[in-house]
Length: 121
Image (tube, rainbow, N blue to C red):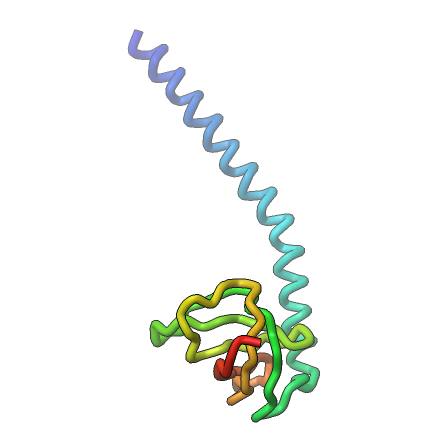
């Protein structure tokens, strides 16, 4: 009796493990194309000039929010596909809100910028 129960349990574990492996392999195949595309976009961004300059004032839509390593909430926006992290946000901003920002600095590779919130547009 114990042998049959052990065998059934072992079979269930084997089926679950096989399903998990199959899911991982499928995810890896489709995920690799996404990773490759992201890497290519990053490489292209490294080779082009930013579409903004220091001190520029731009109107952008908030695409998402992220947390800076300092713990401060930042908005993520884009100018012609160029990523801009916006600081000094007021409460109540939501994804999709259009705001006015001022470009303060670029990261080392000039693939993104930091900006300061100025006002709602």
